Amino acid sequence: RADRTLTSKVTLEITFGQEAIGNITFGLFGRTCPKTVRNFVTLANPNRPTGEGYRGSKIHRIARSMRLYRGDFLNNDGSGGWSIYGRYFRDENFAIKHFPFCLSMANAGPNTNASQFFVPVIRTSWLDGKHVVFGQVIAGHKIVKKINEVKCNTYDRPYRQVWISNTWTE
Image (tube, rainbow, N blue to C red; front, side):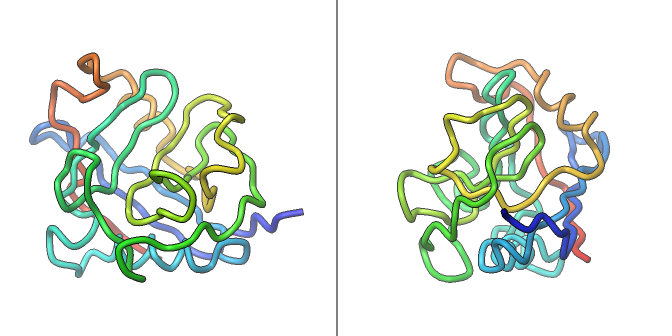
């Protein structure tokens, strides 16, 4: 059984346009996914320059009723980003199955983890064995739901700017 002990926390301040709407805090499973957690915490460090971490990046895709994507601080459209280990890093493990409000790595196939991540708002068992779950929302569930209600085009791109305006780690 996977160890879901929360070893660290990351908080993201979410902004619609210029209006801060609230914070989402993630608890991270550092005993089960130490490498993935280290990558996430490092990229969330508020002292990283804008464009080199999550602070200032857009939520570039909102797959209605399913999940929201963020973490492309390079191009802000889902085509970029990198990890602290290089362009990509290997899938650490699939010990934890997806559940609503888990924190999971987005990827383009096996062993292509970088900086992008998503939060499903429903059960997404078809993602098990394909995406690494490494944390969960521990505060800010209403903010995640509010983001999920943003109107999007047919490509799941939000019409309004939704972005990470600040970050904290502990």
